[in-house]
Every structure is written in C-alpha cells, then in structure tokens.
View 1 (tube, rainbow, N blue to C red):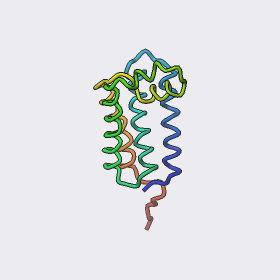
View 2: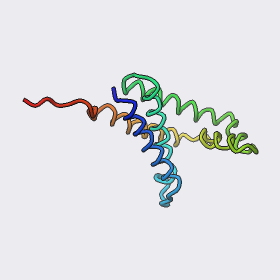
View 3: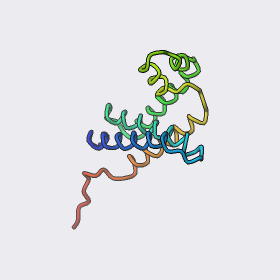
View 4: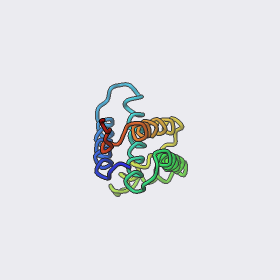
Length: 133
C-alpha cells in the first residue's frame, strides 16, 4: 500500500494538471475536453485511495462506479438546474458534477482510471527496496 502522503501529492498533481487542461486551449478536443475528464476520474481514484485501503483493481472498479453514477445523475437534469442558481457555491457544485450526459465522458473516465490503475499496479511502491546480494 502506498502512503497517504503519496496519494496527497498525486492528488495535488492531478488537480493542477486538470486545472491547466481547462485553462490552456490547444484546439484539439481530446486535450481541451477529454484530458480534463480523464484527470477528473483519476482524481476520484486518488481520493478512493486516500479513504479506503484496498487493492488497485477494487479502487479502479469503485472509481469507475462513482464516475458512472455521476454521469448518469446528469440525466436527471438536477445539475443543469443547479447551474442556473443565483448561489455561486451551487453553480460550482453543478460544474463539478457536470450538466450534460455523454458516453464519450464515460470513455474518458475509463482512460483516466486505467492510466492511474496501471501506475498504481505496475510500478513498484517507492518504499519497496530491491535487495542487493
């Protein structure tokens, strides 16, 4: 298991990259729209890693379930109505939830979760030392 500090640093980097993906526009929809969505899902994986101690596959499945639930929730139109609120906090929450359902978003979420899953599963934990003989 990786340390909480590791996941906090990872989470901070993901959030920074996510904000940058929304500020910097390249003209390529994959980078301008879907990179942020993939990072959003990776952020959820990192949050799950902070809250629960479980294996990478379970974290990936839970993160994808959360992201799918958020995307399906958009079909209720509640987040879209929240976006029209006069309250700034309500509008911010609406932006975080998303307001329009898209299967492409689900694909971007899967890519983001797969990326962080591979990093979590395949790369050795920094505190694991290889013994030398």
